[in-house]
Length: 504
Image (cartoon, rainbow, N blue to C red):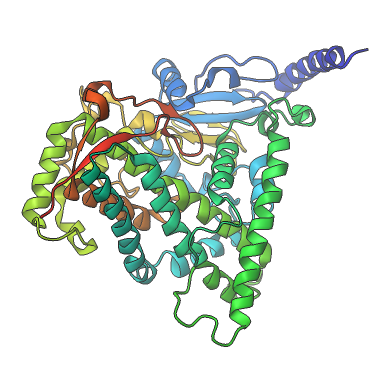
């Protein structure tokens, strides 16, 4: 019997078994949220498409802002309105604070030993405390300000040279390279290292974590590796571990050298290694220690978060500004009035740039980097709005759909219009559920302030220092704004533009 026939028979048997188990496990007299009818085995996975945030928005228009779908044999709740998001992320936050186990995190996060993707418990609470107090505190943000200024200055010089030559530049590549250098220096204490290509590794990692992996939703099919993701996970996890071991070994060797740290900043690896093998909660009964696997897992999460998200947000925003010359002009006028034309923007200018802040809010409303956030998982059965939410349900918050809801944002919800924030106090730090690109509550992004500072500063510099034109006479409305879905959703095509110097 050939392998394809065996697989077909197994799938048929699994279909029957799945239907039988589903009938037994279906809650009696408990009303689930409305949703599309699932297929055997795969459930509603076939309805996600290549851009799940868009597919789920269309389904929510039919079934409502609290929608039940089945991803394989995993129950999932899709949340698509601010009121529903508040119920799940604030009112009942304690029941939805955990993370689901995924094959990708088991391979690449050392069995979920990091902080962002780990499940709720004593370990997670203390890891978050360490990251908040030691890695993302205001003192660290300020300490790395000269580093950000230096790298951004290098980008401006490259663009100025291109301006003098009258050339078109690949803005996406230049911003990505600058952000890569900042990440290397801030997290690892080094510049780009020829010994390894961190960018390629991280891009593959983000793609694999963001993929809807059948093995996560139909474990019985995991052995077949239908999508080929398991094989790729094994390869990339080995590469990641070799890379992280090298980074940690280098830092430990420097630490053993008497004068090794003189003349350089303490980076994130140094901070984590200084805490290793120390009790993080000496007053608790269950003492938590930070070991080598924890250091590597947290470091990997920080690299992944810093590497791609800020650059993606900057590129989306600049693309929207190129599509809307009126808004670009308004922003340049604000920068000219507040900063002047005789110096570059500094970080201390950012709080005074109200229109810049509105532009960033509007960009993150329309183009959130993580349109479905990082999924959560329900700890216990619970009833919300009269609907039964089963234990171990995956909670998917569609912030992309919320950001385009005409009930929330009026009829021009699809339009890039920063002035909508003039007369309201909606913030993007997770307190207002209409706009939460960084998530909300205790599972919100701990590096939010660092990310916002980087995005605002880079945008301010690029718009202040240069005028921008699209290449080859391309009209603003014709600029390609298609998306590439992953853990972060980036612009599918690189942004190309022609800079012209403005500053005297």
